Image 1 (cartoon, one colour):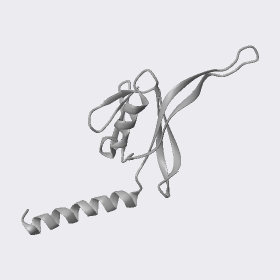
Image 2 (image 1 turned 180 degrees about the vertical axis):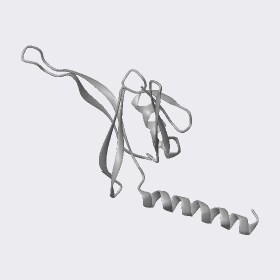
Image 3 (image 1 turned 90 degrees about the horizontal axis):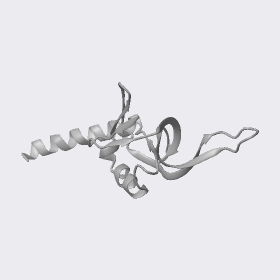
Image 4 (image 1 turned 90 degrees about the vertical axis):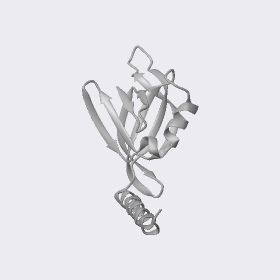
Length: 131
């Protein structure tokens, strides 16, 4: 599975889970994206996801299917998490691996509308000033 960022950067991901998070004073839809630690460093993932213009449009590519997710512009979490890959049984212990994990939260409707209105006002102001 791959995740394509708005700037064209493509990341190999293991799992993408939808969930709900409370971030920046609002309950939001979010995507938790998990990657193998061998794919990149935390610093590279930090740089890629810190810029909201890169995460404003995400395209999840799963085989021949593509799923577009808009306005996931708020990074709610960036971590290395232990993930159980094989649960414990009565005869074997669980197997876990550390994965890079980033949770991107979606802008609310009001935030999207405010940004659109601000852009429209800016364009009108610049047109009026002849700039």
